[in-house]
Figure (cartoon, one colour):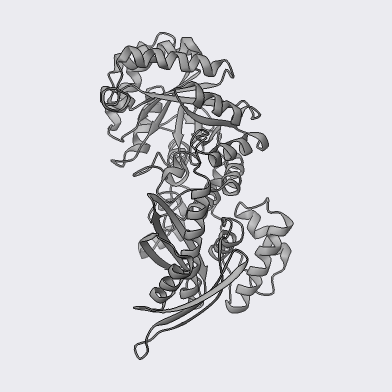
Length: 515
């Protein structure tokens, strides 16, 4: 039986979707996308937003600064290695924020000290202390992370944490950087820290768990029970390799099992699904249907026995109310006769309530165009339009027209016209199929040297008039990006996805100039 958690110790939610989440292959976000997501995180009411790694590039610096300068309602953090330049740059980006946090890190495990840092333990300790002292000159809100802590000597971690607290750190992060720990072991580590750091009462102990063994959420819960009071997580669990602790899973576990876990968060759980959909739309990373809390099947009941039970009493098979995570009981169906006001209300209900007049006009035009060829419009259709019109990177390459021919009695051919800068170019190619011919033509016209790593196609909604959604993953010079496109015509959707990916590559190349 579900139980709303309103008592118990507060667990601080440190959201790193914009930093660690963005390190997922192809999940790069531009400034506009990052700011929109940060604004949604404020609505979700996370406590700390890690906005990025300011020293990494001019683009990352600008994104962090834009969020810190213009967003209120959450602490904004910036990551910095343990050196003066990183910390100074982070502060320059953060200084106008609301209680800004400098998050500096240095590895403590012997394997990292020997092979990566090439330093002795005392050198590491001295550098950690001096870095925290330097950060503390700017702000009293300093977090120190001991990278690869779960594979470190715990007595040495205790020594480091004791020293950095004295130096001015107010949050200590104990990461399971490689996702190696198991819950009982990880919980025991946290208990050891709580018992052997003499000044631990002057700081908040945090954990940052990776999901390489599928245990990030379990490890985070074990840490909470052992004394950790901050959890670093991401929406949809995205992040490097297998990802991070999934915020929505951990929060709903605490809420649903308050009888066993007497802890609380300030998360507005009704914003969970809108946040999940926004992250998926921006990053191009779809949520698997059987994903807990936010997957398409999370509240679906196929079995006749289950359906009968649900109809008689919802709690027979649902331990959570779908409304509590932002899934509406009904889905308002929009059509070609729907007006601007109805569209605006529906979009706001999906979490997009800050569109400018120009953005709303562009979405409304696309909505009407699609509604003319599609009987009913659903949230998924609107998500695709929003992705096309609001979240696209600047278009170096723009599709003007496309004509394709295929079939078992003809030679698959595609003719494409593109706008590149201020001129239009056109070409045609034969391919194995219409999409292959389209991609060949686009590659020739754009002169791209990129490699197509993945191509996926799905139907956004049911019915033969459904929009087709295409996702591609392309790579060039070691940079991987995701491209998305949606259209009732699948060949056009594929062309849009490929061009979106190429435009993201151009954008990424323009933003990776180191400071």
